[in-house]
Length: 123
Image (cartoon, rainbow, N blue to C red; front, side, top):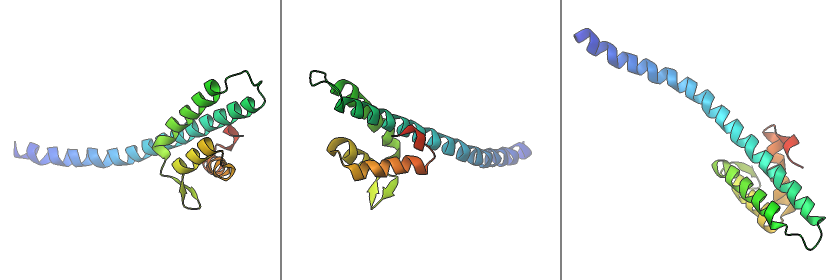
């Protein structure tokens, strides 16, 4: 019985240690997936916004552009604290680009997507 009491904590320690390295790989994979989703949704918002600018005055652009912006904001949330330069976070730059039409901020989030390997998903 004493051997069992000594072995159980050792096995638990081995399981936790093994889980850490496995967890790190999963965390990196999740981060990559979150970045890809954000960049894809940013690109969708850009396309919708650009299409709205050429739409007829009677059409309601909010349906497509607003929904695309909302999707991009939701995808950005887990990444919002990542830096994009000039002291800005991804959350701040995304908000400035989408809410204020800040071209510099939009350039920063597009560059962010390029830096993380998803430049082809944005315009």
